[in-house]
Image (cartoon, rainbow, N blue to C red; front, side):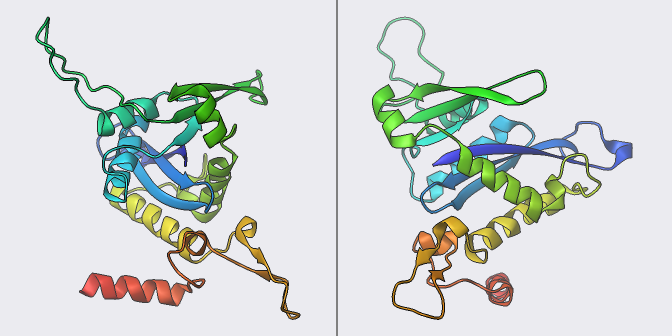
Length: 240
């Protein structure tokens, strides 16, 4: 899996000051690379807070005791977040002061891809840094880039004007900002075919490709959802 982060500014100009409900917020997203499925996201006042929400969601979705193997960019807040959610305080050995800080656990795999830029911001190269796990195993398992999650960030900005840099469409209400993030992820997973996931058809003459959404690739559904179907299901869920 790959993890990435974005920022969005919310709050009216008169109350732009950093408060619990206004100012700059960060959004962290976890992407399953083989299927491109967005499996979790978080919105928080800091990048660490947003990433903590991501890992808490993963705990509820099939990873209760340990995080999946994942790769991110070179920012260090994700390391703090995964330790906060999945780390454990070591047992007291009877000597010295009892431990109080959570520690990473054996079996974790986490790779950072650190980008090096010139004075104009152009990427000049990358450095791979294994944070958790055996270096050879981590590099073989996770690859050497974060291209997929960066591409989904571009998709986010096209989908939601709330995430456009230096735009006027930023969120003015935190709850609406979070609701828009949920709707965007659901539409992306269920309704939008991904070109890299399409399957070639060899026995049909009318078409060459079978389009698939991330949810189809992950085996969560067998068809591309329409907006009418999506909002009908949401309406039924809200009324039940």
